[in-house]
Image 1 (cartoon, rainbow, N blue to C red):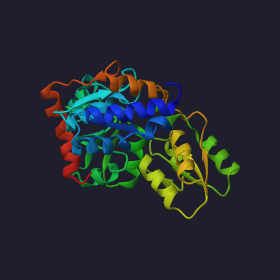
Image 2: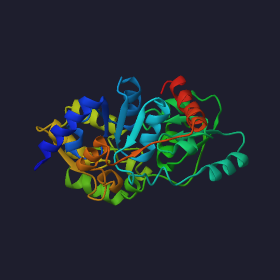
Image 3: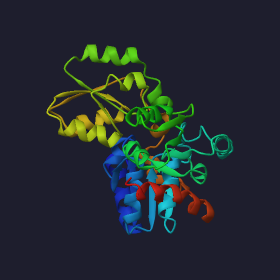
Image 4: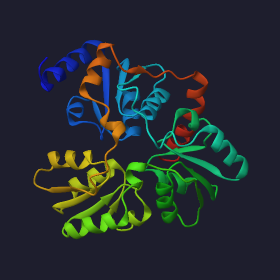
Length: 306
């Protein structure tokens, strides 16, 4: 095989032969997205995998995403295309730390962002995604909420729900949090006709300048449906590229050249090829008790409308 198309065709052949479902997060390379069965945010991918009749699922994303797939589809074989693709945010907090915080604040409901490990989810009360966080937290009867691990998303939720007492823990996505207010102001000055669309994992002072704040999928849907012609994209730079392909008559600018997730960029088409052939990747194996306990906070999210 001498080119990308040859590798893609062979992956598609094996996928059909072995009844494999390929999931691609929106941040991975376009040549993977082109042949994936589903592309989108992490929880959407997990739900799609649960609904598919495929026996095997390959996650082209990071480890916590593959774990979530396994939690919702324990009977399927789930593989992570690149075993080294982790998530800096998901690895920031562990059960020991959060257990200590639960003892310190026993009257708080522990809300875990989906970007957490399966192990940490086992001791949390409810899970949220970036698109459902405000809605889910508003549905929680308890006024006191301990929100982990992203303090920027938590701050955004707290601003939308002033009647809630939302306690934050320092943590979050280093990729989104590295963009400062001055960079956002400079981008708006450089592109005065463009709308600024940012992810709530960005710093509060950056989000305050945005015309729209939302999840990756929310940002993409807003840009595609908007009558505006120019946009500054305040999330992983791959999204600006994907939008430019989908909307060639519009203009998309990256908020910062540094908004690049190195973990997502580790996942390559050859990784997927090796995994689907059985020569690479890593099968995600979780204890049945971990799956059962971690699923409770996801089930609670679904119960509350997530």
